[in-house]
Amino acid sequence: TLAATMAIGLGTLVVLATTLVAGRLAFEIDRDLPVGAPTSFFVDVQPSQWVKVREEIRRAGGTSIESVPVVTARLRAVSGRPVRELARGREGSRRWALTREQRVTYLATLGTDSEVVEGRLWSDPRRAEASLEEGFARDLGAGIGTELELDVQGVPVVLHVTSLRRVNWRSFRINFFLVAEPGALEQAPQSRLAAARFPPGGDDRAQDAIALVCPNVSVIQVRSLVDTVASVLRRVGIAVRVLGGFTIATGLLALAGAVSAGAARRGREVALLKTVGMTRAGVVVALAVEHALVGLISGVLGAVGGALLAGVVLTRGLGLEVARDPGGIAAALVVAIGASALLAALAGVGASARALARRP
Image (tube, rainbow, N blue to C red; front, top):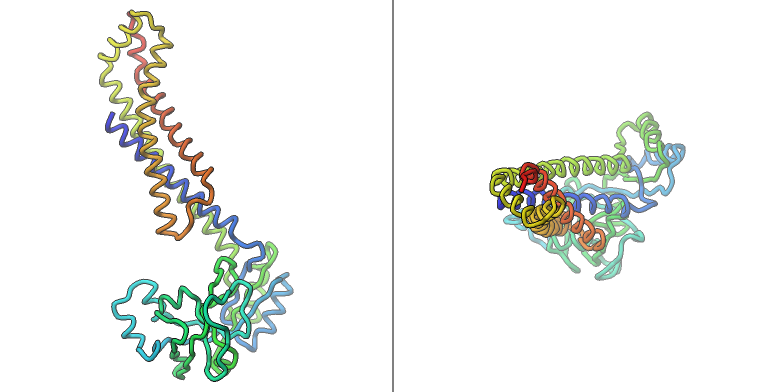
């Protein structure tokens, strides 16, 4: 019974945790993707090519066309401290923010998906200014008044942080960690980044047309990427749930084996119950209740463990909220517990078939 309880509970845990995580991810992909989000991005467009690229985008049915300049740079120092010194001992995103190749744009105004949360945008006419995304600023260890020294292909450029922004990255629109004010980087070597939304089939038409006139431009189709990710997540979820199903089956076999091993004792119990007047249907109900309690205990342990595991994966691993649909989570718990009890009852009664045939 102990082995069966552990196996059924573990299988329930795996199946429920995978179902909750997969369902939450599917919800994020299907519902939180904005309706007007771009479906394709165009990278490394040279300034002289932008007119041709824009024409091809429009011919392919592209709408909501956006384009911004992009300057590639390296971060040399933060408030006079060299990046190598600052990166020493840092790990993960805090080190990556310092050592990555910085993609910088310059804009007069921010988009609707960016909000200044500290400082003021382009408020100091005496210095070249920069606006940082708040999470990126935190990883850099920068704030209002921080001086950033950039290396733009060997030319030093100094920017002063005068504002911090909160960016809605889920908008899928073009956004940057680091934005400079107009006039700071116009003379630097640069390319353009563009985005557009296409009707079904328009992404492929635009990619084919642009490859003929501007073969250096890379096209990233977001719609196909999202569909691929969703498909992979569904397949992985199915595979893990199948493995969890095998674990549950192992537990049911262990339960049936335990019942069969005590067939002689169980047969005497059944015969005695019939002797004192219980019908065969009554004996079946009694056995079903007994084994359903084993499944119920297993289901409760597995369901609670699965819900906790899914919560940890979603919040700590993926940075998502768990309680988006508490009613759905409660329903999944009830179904998992009920299914464990029902399957255990069926396995126990099935393994007691010989005992049930004993005559008084």
